[in-house]
Length: 331
Picture 1: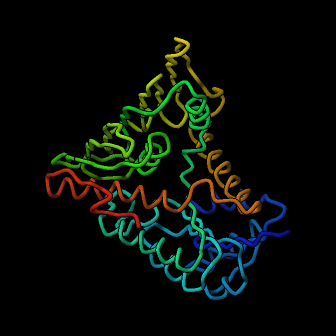
Picture 2: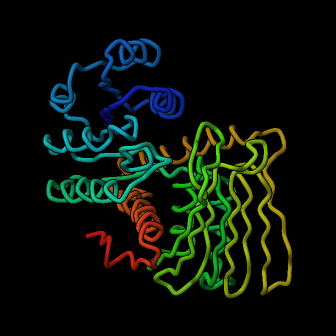
Picture 3: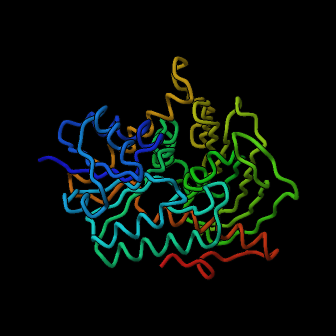
């Protein structure tokens, strides 16, 4: 059986991290739509597949799933236009929506993202997200360790995160500690700059639905050569410490009394890890489509990430704690 996959948006992210992986699959046929048709034609010439002149033409091709890989600023309009054709499935690059770029998510982005998922649900369209940081070797190893039975539930979580990794870090907190219930945040008065991102620093204290507590610090003021995020999860029976895209992961196991260090092979850079995580994420999603299973990262994960960002923005603006489920309900 040949899977028909639509690609909407053939920019650098699509060309660098998605299309090569998809084009290498023997059972996949690719169809492209891009605002500038010449760019889609160049991709088709390099990787194979066919180019369509509009979303209507693409959807008349009856793709099994459509990868929405436009800029985050355009993703809401594109997604709503696609949903008019009642697609079977949509797969989103992260963040789900960000009208003013991912470094400046607003409360409205949450409501726009929720509208996408509500419309998709009404049309029986399955949604999924990339969130490829879940597929780093260290993340996979940590999840296996946590599910071994010795660690129990998360009690605390702490993070220091460059904004280039911000949405991923929020998703990892959800992945390991569960959804956030309440948040209280402060920001700096002056912006920091780094990696082309100018933004205020943010410190957000939170409580999860499982009653774990924690803190996340978001900043652009981190040296690009150092780890771009650090996350610590304190469990009932142990502790796990992540450091960057390619850094060592420390595991403290209370049951055995051991302090273990997990490291990737030193011949791989952080960007090797980054690229490989896309392949693993995409392949896991394709397997779910082929086998008729739910996606490994559902679309609701993208809305949960926006819910946290919206809660942070409101808490800073109004100088008060925000109960996420009351003020930004998912459904």
